[in-house]
Length: 633
Ligand code: K7E
Ligand code: CUA
Image 1 (cartoon, rainbow, N blue to C red):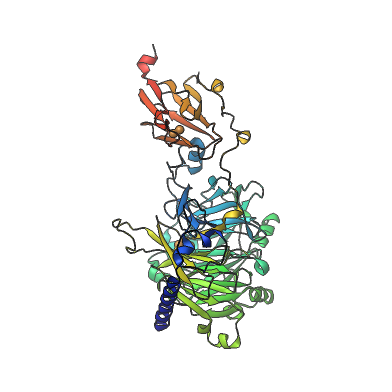
Image 2 (cartoon, rainbow, N blue to C red):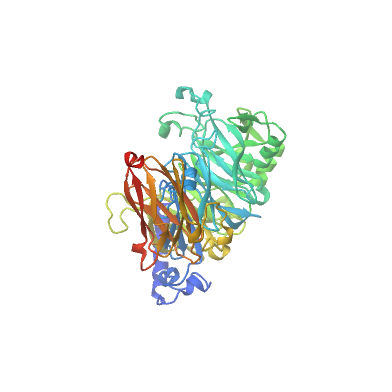
């Protein structure tokens, strides 16, 4: 294995050198914007997007425990913007106005793992991006019309550790979720962790998406044993209506998991018929648990099956045809390829190898197509839509490219023969992404490797090192490394979307502003007092605020509604109030509201935080707060 790996690495280097000798001057962004074959020209020419030119694809990275989503362009890998989701972000004023404060609630962080684009007929429709928060059991919806977080749902009842999401069904009927941790349910109930097997449970949840608005609600749940559910994916084609998750810890250990949860040779994947679950709930076969219809799979046959998968598996990925399901065990150097048509047949014939707590266990050997010896520490698999799979190898720090079934008799006899290429990545890759891999039509052009360690491949920034992402050209028979960039922690998964698949707005049209407190002209602005509440209707426009003086008394509540009346793209104003911990950032045509309790007297200047004009610095005013004893006079 090692020598093959070394050989392939050398071959890759040789290929890169060959490409370099045919170097095109990186003048114009031929590869980037002309749509011609990506593999033409040097890596520099292929990733070069010149000043003023635009990328061809969006890359939506999860921001991991930063709680945010990063947006970059491909092929340049340039970071373009950050979409704040689960944490305050003064850069866009997120978490400072009343609306976004209410969305964030009391949580100040989130742990974003798997962005999922909305789909129609199995293809990205460019409407929404869903992301999960592993830490606080939430799901957020970002609207791609304006790249803003519009809803945060959660904490989801009966769900602890929302890691196994956000997996979007073919027509965005659901975002599917599985719990990583198990606890005594409903949440808030106490049981001794020593009684883990008996008292603890996990769940799989169907988060319903309202088709027009995208509004999320908890549709139903399926109660599971206290396994630790891991990654998942939704079915398509023949497996449409199904979803799959791996698990670790079918040992149901509650301590020292590193040893105690790695005893068995196989853990269970969950094979979930979400259409059947939906129908069972409609038929009244669920019981409410913490307000959510909960299905007991032992009493509602047909919603859940188990499938044994080696060994402490992590990723499970449905291929673009929907027939092949690939699961990888971190502790076994193979990718297990399952045939969904055989899974269906096994269910039909009750070809089970037993059951666990009333749920049938599908006979592994009846449905396995083959175990592909991909290499060490396989995690996640992506597809190029041309019959090839790409599996990330954490331990080996590499990506393996291999041929999907159908295989010839000769290949079947020795599945080493289906390994087509391997490329080193730096270092310890987690997820990888190919555009559209989870749709029926992958783009199959670039692969982004999201590596966990950068180990100093950058100028030193001290001990807290960034993550390393590498761009790999997959258009040729051999993979080719063409670029490398660094991000803040920590991209887990990402989604790639064709840039021309969406048309984001650049200003909020005045005609669409429905905020009752919006004002557009100076004559409508003003400060009004109602008891202890001082309400301000304010305009921000180059280069002043109207009004630019607000008078209040100590202990008053000051409510400021500020409308940026500009209709010019990129004409953004901020409203920072000194020593009040406020920074609203208002986009053109947008209205934001903040409520302030004036706890201390004094004069607090406010100013525009977003550089907007030559007289930006002059865009300022005063919030004058009289002390109570003076105000009383
Ligand atoms: Cu593999 Cu959260 Cu998808 Cu990280 S998970 S790598
Ligand atoms: Cu308005 Cu700076």
